[in-house]
Amino acid sequence: MTEQLDDMYRDIIMEHYRYPRGHKEISEPDLANQGHNPVCGDVTEIKLTLDGDRIEDISVNCVGCAISVASGSMLADMIEGKTISDVRKIAEVVRALIKGEEIDTDLDLGDLEALEGVRNFPVRIKCALLSWTTLVDAIEAREVGQTVEASTTE
Ligand code: FES
Image 1 (cartoon, rainbow, N blue to C red):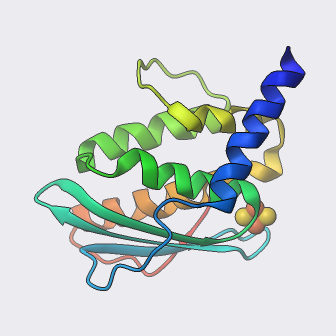
Image 2 (image 1 turned 135 degrees about the vertical axis):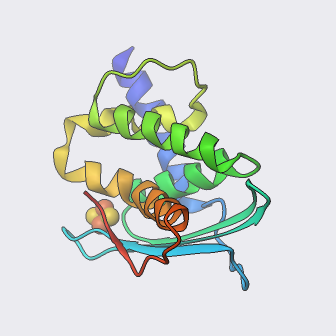
């Protein structure tokens, strides 16, 4: 059973890796940031447009391993149409899921649940968090009226 579950999760990750959602260009973003994983040097670039406080459109262009690309693709799927405050809550839940921390939530994580097993491979945690950290840093910088130059996965 566990093996079947692992296979299913692997298939979900590989499907996002092959056909990443949000893989496009946004020419006039309201928010943008580039993040890199210091362990391998892989990068992700996130841009989004806002309609008020709501995410209208998002692009995620990640050049990295299957886990980093899949996680960025799931991010694009998950947050389009959400408000900035929703995104912050979702990002917190995803971080906890990936790091294996307890968090009380009834959020439907959808495909993101496929990343739960990453917690058993500490070196891959940075891969899975790359796009999320990049997005949250951009949101936090905006909230304090700054632009962010680039992010590093923590
Ligand atoms: Fe570079 Fe995963 S190995 S992001």
